[in-house]
Image (cartoon, rainbow, N blue to C red):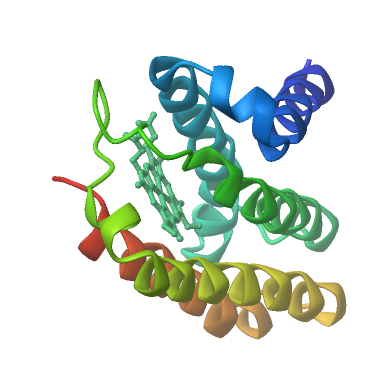
Length: 151
Ligand code: HEC
């Protein structure tokens, strides 16, 4: 089920990456896709957060698995901001497109922190060893949400 969902998302992102397909795609479909991307991200961040907070026992293999999915999805995310998808049922701010350089910076930061979390988790035998980098990832989410997402 999860594999099928990811395959669908990856398929869509490949489609969006090619110019002609992007031109044909409807803004409401892009918005749906974008929310799906962030739902997948949020879904996999949640158990890591529960482990870091001590609400769930630390399971290194599970932590790594979740971190890897978030890192992979962070490479899909840039493809979910096709021009024209700022209008409709979306919280994406127009600044994403009008301040493309600033947006790229927070997106790059997010990808870097997500990638780093995978590396850290792979050698972290205790939850204390992932706490710092998990916090850095959380800050990267906030850096974008604070400036480029409506309340
Ligand atoms: C580079 C910008 C950016 C980063 C980084 C980012 N987000 Fe978001 N996120 C957004 C935007 C923009 C939306 C609004 C999407 C929309 O409504 O079209 C959003 C929406 C969401 C949503 C709601 C999806 C829905 O169903 O409406 C969740 C959950 C979410 N983000 C979680 C996260 C988490 C967790 C992280 C970090 C691990 C993160 N995001 C990092 C920009 C970002």
